[in-house]
Image (spheres, rainbow, N blue to C red):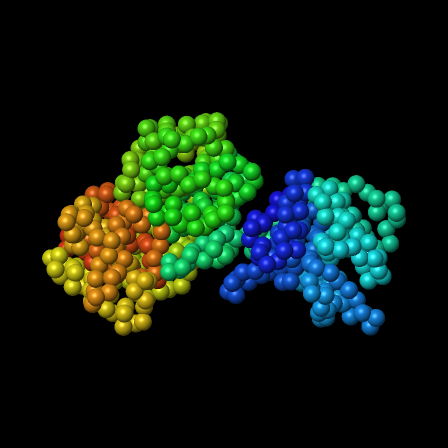
Length: 536
């Protein structure tokens, strides 16, 4: 059975829920799908309320409440749990009342959100560590105990519960024994539940990589996940900030969880480091572009920043690592062919079109990284589309010009001091160099861009644009913006200016400043024309 999100998203402290999740996943059927509630950050709404699992099974909606350990009931009818020390802990409600309330709350929400209703549904309590004697409080089908804790046993239990869901009150016995049909008209509910429940790990704060940080997916990201589940070859296109890297990592994780040998391929050391943190404990193998030729065959190959190797030589090497090759194997590639294709590596338009013709194409158009102020600034000054912003407004982004390297450093240091006065931690401030030639950077030391820059005896991270592709930072100060009339210079500026999750400050050469000003004027004229056409 399909489990959404994957089992590893169940809280590791909820051993009973994790056991049930593993069991549902092991049920030998493609007809059903189980959604489980996960312990998410407070800002994440959980439409399932207190429901541990919602299972769409053969035409019915089944709500499962999981109770680990042992349950008991006093002579007064009060339910309690028993911990490992034998201590009794009273429960505020009967487990079956809790399951019933969760089921009806879910149905109310589904009716409001989908406009439907009158679906077959039932609820049950799962006690994976004990069997309970029959009781008038529940029908036999509404308790799934220890004796059903095998894949076949769980399947029989779900079948019985689905029959109960599909049985009208007072139905004759022969109706109760009808054959179960596969999941019917619950597609709309499945889509809605997945939108609300499916999740992936991401890293919103670069000071600390939080292994259990889980955020919900956008509709587009869910569509991408569906494409991976249904198609062997998928090409995901999206601009900076649309979540390509995190989706690629999640896709690799899920493919490996299904028992495939999986390679996550990328040329960025920073992205590979991020992947190693987010894939901790997963068998996914991380492969730099430079090591492709030395690898064995994989069942699935996931390629991030694929625009850097879309050429005959590199794609031929990649094909040798895919079981079945490019034509018959399973590969999912993620790229931005428009704005990041000429920064590193080699991009061949013909190879790109040929690969695109052999794959299902998914577009990511919603920006989930940058605040609206950054999105608007990049769109207006570089003429590059970052998609529609999904997060807050953010502080105003600033672009200034410097006529000399000394003036550029002064502006840089002034900006850093301003952030310091605002209380921003130095660990959240990153300087990004967009210099095509490191020796020409305003920060160059011995012909290269240093890894840090000191302001008032404090060191701040410095990263070249080519090294920070696919990654993000909180507060970004960009230097060395120049050469916007060349593909490489424009790509470097685009990458550098699209890293911030919060604030952006750009120090530009006079020539680049003039080009960006021209783009901004055109952008304003286009916006005025759009408003005029709407008014007409």
